[in-house]
Length: 241
Image 1 (tube, rainbow, N blue to C red):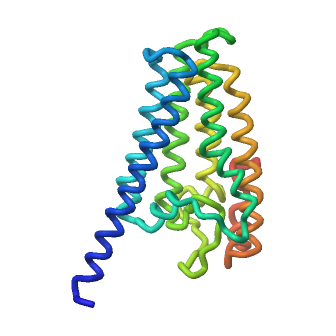
Image 2 (cartoon, helix red, strand yellow):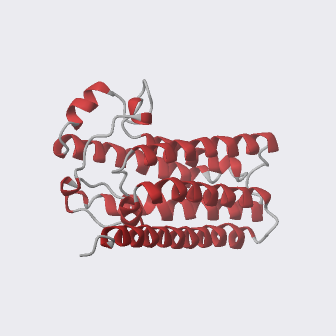
């Protein structure tokens, strides 16, 4: 192995991670776009474009911060490999990241098409956009703070998996999920659809279940997590749960 081989391998890993991240972002953007515009039957839906813009911006920020810092994690998150000790996470992650959001967007689009619910005032829609952005930023902060922020519940001892207790992890044990809860509760108001709260509530319920199961897995299997859970008492909401 030549002296430049590790550098070349690092550059190759960084490039491959960036390509995978961009491809995943493109696919999800396409799916979400079709869900919104085909169900609503219109392309001039301003808040739908705002939702897509926020999603794309969030992914680009994650890529800019995470790909150079931790390309291995980015590659792992695009693969979403199943973990032997957490097979229960397979259906939960599917609902939380794809099927639930698609259902929420389709319901909001059909609401736009058929006018099932009264119009949400524009100031509330704009406020919901701000709240959704804050939820996204919280998830990004958690992801950047934790180099073991895997796409599925897993413990990677061979990679030196350890407890993360800095940044937002000083307040709650699962700040990434907390940000996702805030985001998904804001989206129905952003998209002017009260009916969309039904799939949003399902997503939030799945996130709560996933938080509890992952927390138990980490307490049982990750060294130091038991002590961390005693210092940081709450999983999602400070002072509540």
